[in-house]
Length: 214
Image 1 (cartoon, helix red, strand yellow):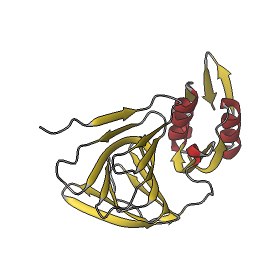
Image 2 (spheres, one colour; image 1 turned 60 degrees about the vertical axis):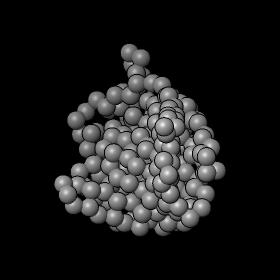
Image 3 (cartoon, one colour; image 1 turned 120 degrees about the vertical axis):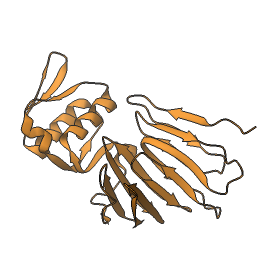
Image 4 (cartoon, one colour; image 1 turned 120 degrees about the horizontal axis):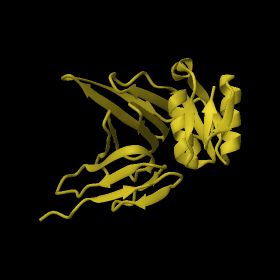
């Protein structure tokens, strides 16, 4: 009989740090799930992820694999952040290199992401060419900030909702087409909403128990 898998989950506004059996460390962002599977005699270390997590992987000669609904990340030993939410996979590497691959309709594609680079993969597409991380202090959620890279305004609102356990509504169809690249203080809901307003040129109000962007 094989040992059962371990499942770790965080709720809104919650972070959690997990020490893996191989001495690697994973820090989960809010509303995320990580499954640590038993090795079953395999050399590869496998952890399915849904949500966002920061990985510090100890190098021991065997591959470390993060599997998501949109792609697979393979490393040997490095530090990197993985976010998979709202049909978007984002991988940023702090040290070392990782390989990001995705399979679509029988075709597959992969890219190598090096230290200081970020890569995005949309749900229906393949991994894009890596680009330099545009901000210091990445990932922001571990340093008291939101850091958004070509993120839709809808995704930004979902992050704010999960961080502060509030409701945010977009009040115009055009807002669903807007994207944001920028750093936002996440110490309070007021400072976050004000920063989003400045970055986008939109306004917001608090009404009927929710924040409304218009």
